[in-house]
Amino acid sequence: MTVLASLGILVLGMLITAVLIQGVRRFIPVELRGREEKRGIVFAFCGVLYALVIGFVLAFALEGYQAADSDAGSEADSVTALSRAATLFDAESRDRLGHELICYSRAVIYDEWPKQSDGESSELATAATDRLFQSFGGLGRSNPDDAALSSSLDRVRELGESRAARLLKSNQSLPSMFWVFMIVGGLMLTGYATILAGNERRLGQVIFILPVTLLLLCAIYLVAVFEQPFRGPNALQPQAMEVALKSVTDFVPDPRANRPCP
Image 1 (cartoon, rainbow, N blue to C red):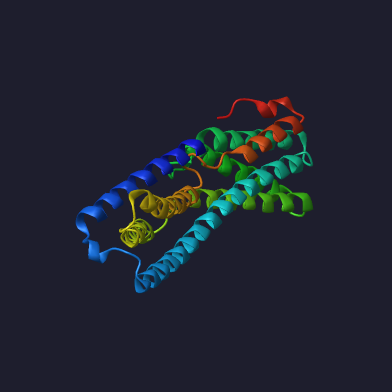
Image 2 (cartoon, rainbow, N blue to C red):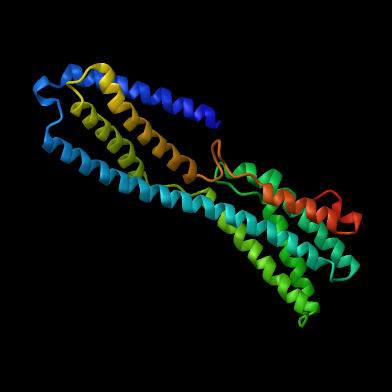
């Protein structure tokens, strides 16, 4: 998909460059074209301003992407830790907790993860989360002073918080004004660059304008990729939860824990 995206950016950049060159040659008078000193200063100022805004937006989107990856990893770590803690309880509780952790992992991987691309959650994962809270809460009422149980309850809370944060990020997007600025501002910047190179031959115009167009398209593409962590060709995958599911399945000794989920 990265290769296809690169080819798409290249083709789109060439198309935009060709349209801009033809448009300037047709609609802009010759006396208004060229690289006058004052025009160069204006172009440099606009370029710096645009780069600053794009950098800010890209950093914001990248931070959200990394946070979503971190939340998914913390959620999987909680599942693995709870499976270890389950072995500290009696056989019946260990079997029940192991089964519920397996069901939760399966619900996240196979049901909730695909739905995140549409900003939706999974009823199966929600039900599995509720069962985990109820099971550990029931153990807490019968063993109020158990240190291992207290730590497990903290882990259950962290699991719920990580899931909630992951779901929140799957339904977030940048304000529309950022997209308007990036697209319209990019077209204005490339159009101004075309006017500055308006008196050169076509090849010289292409050499001057095409790199600018491609860089702007790449920046906008990166923002689009990082804005939605669970959508598109570079969407995050449930690899951490898959590892956690295998770990729980292998670690919980009672084979009944791996029975079908409700």
